[in-house]
Image (cartoon, rainbow, N blue to C red; front, side, top):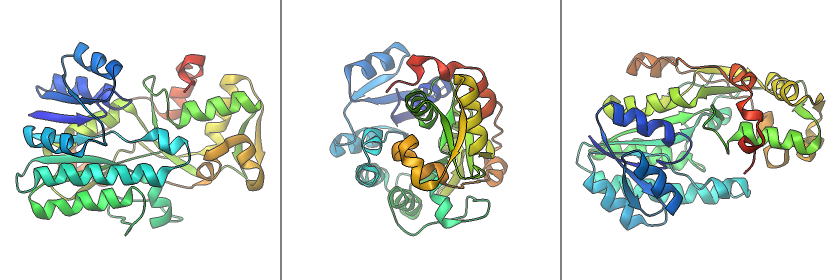
Length: 306
């Protein structure tokens, strides 16, 4: 297939593109900068200049493709505390791409997150059939699922908070490490028993390829390798690697150490991928989160700077 990929030069895209090419697909990658365009061209990707703001360009690229994988997101707005605004841009992009694919039977794979299920499934293991009615990023997910009724083979990959590997330079792990360095301690909130699911970047990339190749329309998928790593263990691994003290802080002091991640660091988000594995025969094969942290690639200064 000729596949249009947004975010092709990003964290997951940099793992997905080689996987797609190795499987015999042709890739057209969206690039908003010269650096991204150069990186994509170097790996035999056709470059499409543009951004999520260029809705006409997104529609045209989707129309010209056999399928679309949508990875791009305005993460810079999220880090600036404007997640809802970033989600609005995402929804517009999803709707534009979906409109271009309507009635074609072509695949569209978009991205959402398991963390949303902390509200849909509080106190239990989140599963693929859990659904929220509305909210930031939820609206994009629900819009994509609804497109299946309009002749789009749409699917949603829900990613865990921690998609980890040596390719991850701007995600939650580098951010937590940078915060620990700055504050002089690696912290968890309360008893730290709240759980974060996780997946290795290469395993996540494989799931996107399987989804665009064969996921049925209207399918929610979970890119989860580990159902839930206790946040205290994550903090301990970071503290051990940085040779910093590891300490518990009360909720009202969490922002002092964790900034905009203070509330998120307290989320309990255990999530299952059993249905996804059965449907697409997806089996994660790479290192778990704590093993990945122990390999120390995250602890190099260049890996934790944004």
